[in-house]
Amino acid sequence: MIRLTNIEKRFGDLTVLKGVTLSVAEGRVTALIGPSGGGKSTLLRCINLLEIPTAGTLRIGQEELSFRDGVPPAWREIQRLRRQTGMVFQNFQLFPHRTAIENVMEGLVTVQKWPHERARERAFALLQKVGMAHKADAWPATLSGGQQQRVAIARALAPSPRVLLCDEPTSALDPELSGEVVEVLGRLADEGTTMVMATHDLRLASRIAHDVVFLEAGQVVEAGSAQALFTQPKHDRTKRFIATLTQQGQHGEGV
Amino acid sequence: MLHWLTLMADSLPSLLWAALVFTIPLTLASFALGLMVGLLSAVIRLFGPAPLAVVVRFYVWIIRGTPLLVQLFLIFYGLPSAGIVLDAFPAALIGFTLNVGAYTSEIIRAVIGSVPKGQWEAAYSIGMNWNQAMRRTILPQAARVAVPPLANSFISLVKDTSLAAAITVPELFQAAQRIVATTYEPLILYVEAALIYLVLSSALSALQLRLERRLGRYGGFLEAKS
Image 1: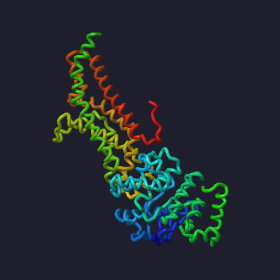
Image 2 (image 1 turned 180 degrees about the vertical axis):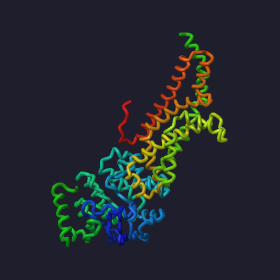
Image 3 (image 1 turned 90 degrees about the vertical axis):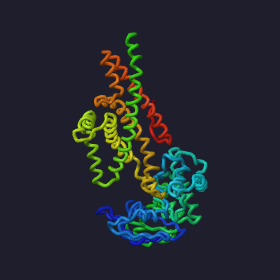
């Protein structure tokens, strides 16, 4: 359902993605793992076009867009693809001047022009889904990190995206708080939400991901089912990296 | 002493009238227009095409770098030589608007820039375009931070309108001057004028505090104790 073909991203002289090709099937959860600076976040941001790839082709559902160096795509084209996605950020990035439920309603009301009442109903249902209905009228500043991230997940889901992108959704949270986020994402995965997530959190990846892509220095080193990659990695490099994640997991889960 | 009080009481109506008809409208109108100029200038500096941003920088440079009084004289006494004749009030309005615009453009540029980039990204990620992100996400957050420095500009402006006296606008200070010319009581009259300016700017200070609290009600800011 999502297909990246030869996605390349350069920032000046620095090439962050060196021709990444991967696909994500509908209803599957793919975890991008790999060392910091390896291109996970950039790859994720190339899917919703917060970064415009330098070259390559991006396909989400029926929508496709090709990139050529130096030719920025039209805004309409960007919006066409971006509307297929929802994004959860490492630092939540809730709108601090809007209450929890207003955060979730924002895309529906402002972008999709839903009537206020209908948007409120859908937002409330989504807050219930992430276990935050009791804080619907709270300001983000009064919520814990885990609560903020759950509201952010509801906000990302509000416009019914085809794919939920999660950029290190648990790494700003302590193990206990990240637990509640993992649980919510796990439930979404069980319901068949298509997801792509960049993560260092082994608990998150192993609990939720069907597929894992190991990315280093802008290239896919190894990709496969979570089961295969975590238990029998083919490459030495993958093996070593997963070993470090496991060690961290023993010292205190997550990073 | 009694003589002073009588003088104050007698002159108060004319001074208040001058404040009501000239000082206050001039302040409000040039601040409102100046804010628009400032917002536009800030947006051009941050997001506009480079040549236009250079023009705006030039405008800010000229206005901030020359005395307000000189600018007012140029507009009112200088421009007629170039064939542009303006009445005193519009000349003052233009002068103050340009001035407010230049100073507030720097404030607005700074506060827009102070909203974390992640907020733009969050807005884009739910499908907003630039306009929607700016209007719904960035400006409301920037506004809270902008209140104290904008209040500075506003309060300066109230007092600076006294310069319009020099280009024949019969505002508060000029009204005081005129009464001094007939009564020869500069001390009393200028103290009285100063007190009226003080009352006006105090009202703005109070407004500032209320606005800060209102715009910052979502929390996450250090608030002034008083």
